[in-house]
Length: 385
Picture 1 (cartoon, rainbow, N blue to C red):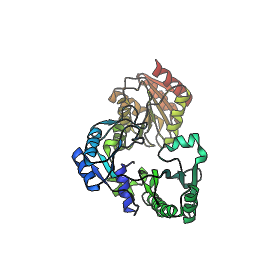
Picture 2: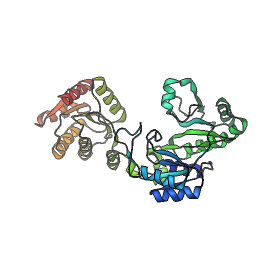
Picture 3: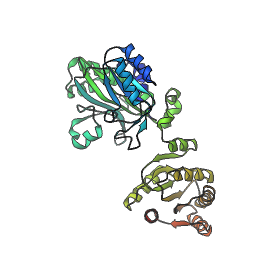
Picture 4: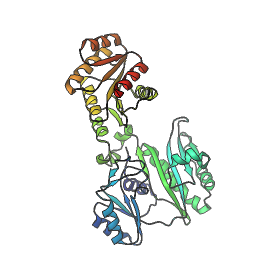
């Protein structure tokens, strides 16, 4: 789950992190009042779940309350297009008015889970204010990494070493220590999956989080009702939101082959095979290990809501759920939903032969496949026809 910048900074304040004074506004008049209360130059920032807002005109430095009003008026109710939103953009419903900060240098700071080492990794770079993925691709040597031993935790000497490697002064390193300690606590205590400060600006004798991005592990949200309350449904893909209601795992993509699979690993392998065969998946969809006719019906509806879908590939491995039961569910769901696009079904595992026989006798336009690559090839061919 993602949150807005203004929400992330409220959480930082709760952990005693010093951030610039700011106020949320949903109208140009509110933005003007906020700027007047703050005093001096302010920055008006569009609040959407996407990076690269500055490149899309979603961040404006202004010198007066009247200019803040005009900047907010130009953002609110408009679509903001950034490198991360795609061409469709995102509707700006609120802006954050924040006191301007003097900037000597811009750094990058991020915390995430390193699955390879099973640790929390702290990444830092002197190349702040730009996409860290670009830095990693072009200048990986500019990224510094700390692997935090989960048994020992984050040590002050690690932070100091990192600070001096970033060419900070002694006083600036002294400012970095409590900041990074607070971020580490947030990561652990709130079940975060990403804590990103970009840019972390060097200003005078200290460092200041100028922007903050927080992502939280959905599986841990039941422990944090305060974080759940920060969810903004308007920022979520409508199909992803609907999928959660039916306990389906969904991620929208830009291809034309709808995927319905049981198991996240199998779903990833299915998409890989579609790509290998020259096709493009339209979605990631894991219906879970206990899929029944009702859940399969909901899954079909979600897939068919995408007008780009030209074919559907169902890839089921029978374990907890039996393939013959899935086959009957697919037939029932196909009739109920009214699937009009080509449908390729691959069943493997327990009762797979019985399942394929049921599909064959259904009289429906369902193409059966035994191997994963065969299924992918048939789905790609069907989408292209």
